[in-house]
Image (cartoon, rainbow, N blue to C red):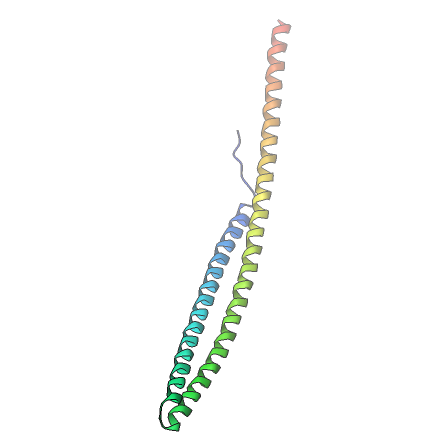
Length: 149
């Protein structure tokens, strides 16, 4: 029996490598999103601390400058949170883009695998036909040898 050689094996190998690279890129994008979400959560916690401190300051007899500084700190935290929200959105869009690319890479690999399977099935059919032909020739030879003598 002859050995099966898929003539487009190198393309299949490339598709598999592309899929692995895309999986890596997707994982990195997810990690980046998680990192950005964690930063956002930390900013929200810091803002809550400033707000609590501001409430305490308003209930105490403190100089007005302390309250003003606290209000400024809360305003700065609001700006930082808004900026971080846009970072989270950007990271989320990147995750979605990488997910789409990964899906495409998986589909391309599966297409190549299906083509390989079809080529292998065709190879098997040819091998079976060749074997049947050889068996028919043997049978004809053996049968012809018995009747001819």
